[in-house]
Length: 246
Image 1: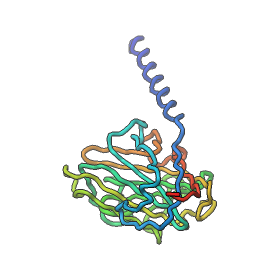
Image 2 (image 1 turned 180 degrees about the vertical axis):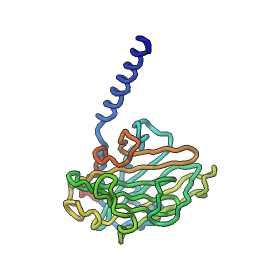
Image 3 (image 1 turned 30 degrees about the horizontal axis):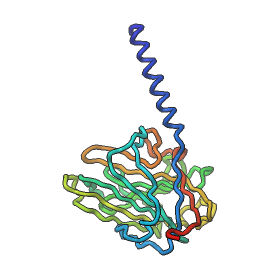
Image 4 (image 1 turned 90 degrees about the vertical axis):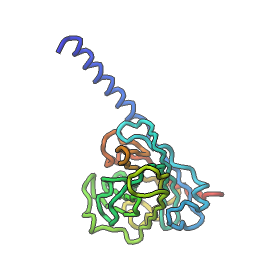
């Protein structure tokens, strides 16, 4: 390699590392959840008044780079004494999934994902995935990428539902799909309080995996790696104790 070539190689690496360092120094997002005055009817329709009165979590970005994404993705969170609820809406012109049974490898197609780590001092966390066909993958991980076998841990009171505006065949012409998930607090065994008290904070991340017409991985709190399993890069969910709409 010539001296000029070496110079530009060093310059490229330096700029890359500077950019990565700057991205990693970006503060993690924080969502302050309001309490729902009524239990959510988990049907995937997002027509409860509470979803109109709580703020969206904020933009989803490309997970590996943190760059803005053209894929329109929105999410909201609320809770009551029994569940923490997640609502999700994505615009999608090519909705696609083929796996329709629980605990299949849903991440290989198109999904919405929720990762919850209630205690950052404990390595375990919960991962939930829902696809447009309404299939669920619920996982309890003892540590990073160390799950209890999928079929041996299922949340008994977990609720979820989807609504699709289009066809789930990967062909153009669709508009999008919505999803609601209700995670029961008794499953979050590392939480300091169940239900949470005002001011309790959990680590949280939300993801979207897109496959057609092109692959994409989006995150509420980008991990800056091609890897979703990085709890240290998650955002924070704060239970405010305040009731939505009041």
